[in-house]
Amino acid sequence: MPSSEHQLLADLFKDRPESGRVTALVGQIASILNLLPPGYAGAGLWESKTTLHPVELSSERVALLYNRQGAAARALVVEIQQDIKEDKRRSWPVYAWAAWRETGVDADVVVIAPDDAVARWEQGTITNGRHTFNVQVIGRHNLPVITDEQEAKAKPLLALLSAGVHLQSSTPPAGSSQIQADKDRQSAAQMKIADTVARDIGLPDAEIYVRVLFNHLNAEARTMALEDSGPFLTKFEQEARAQVKAAHEHMVEMALEVYEARFAALSGDLRQDLRQELVKRTPEELVALGGELAKADTPENAQVLIRGGTVQHRSGRGR
Picture (tube, rainbow, N blue to C red):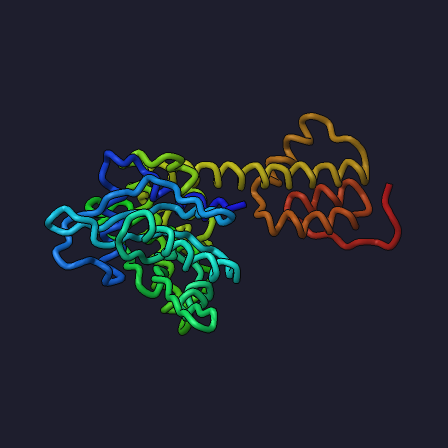
């Protein structure tokens, strides 16, 4: 079953045909790969689903590239590949042959790989001993990083595809901490672009797409992405703050429960008073306090600890 990341990238190629965005994306990908035919005039979508018994072709999209005379000059079979699967190296030549059989023009298989290791694997020559075949690979090595808002508006699906590929990568940048910081800033900028573009074009499941990409960011990039962010990221920030607040309140209640388990139930006023002291503590301080409360020998000493004081523990247990 395809992963959510796979499906969200695949859905970019299923955007409303009447918008013209998918055909524009196909042309942009073909340009990156130097696959545009002489006199390129535009792209179109091939809707037929080819079935070769017993092999069923199930790519994300088949598109045609047209010349100025309006004739189809090349076919592109687009595939998203997240993992290394050896059987795909036997399927891709069949995809190209089937597309050629149906469209009557030379066909290339374009594989989009967010993972660097998968991209390198795909670039190897496929051979059965007599015939060879090469797929065309789109990955971090050749897909441009789009962080300019005007460029993203002009190429919305390419901007979303770029964010999907670059932000999903688990490969850390090699080099110094400054290189990592620059990468975090780039990731945050791409995240903001994806947030804005996905909303502006009415991408189906736009919030899910943005959330999946956001979850791939490290803590530093998330913090930067949430500064002056768009609608979805603002919502995620509010959710994150609510979760942090809820977790902190839970830790406060746990500290009070430790007290009551050691000694006795707190009266309403005293409980509220101690609670107000506890909410001032950081999560780390509350964790440490829990251990101290477990060793407190009297309720008075436990209250001193809660109020930020220190006590000397006697051996044995109080009350």
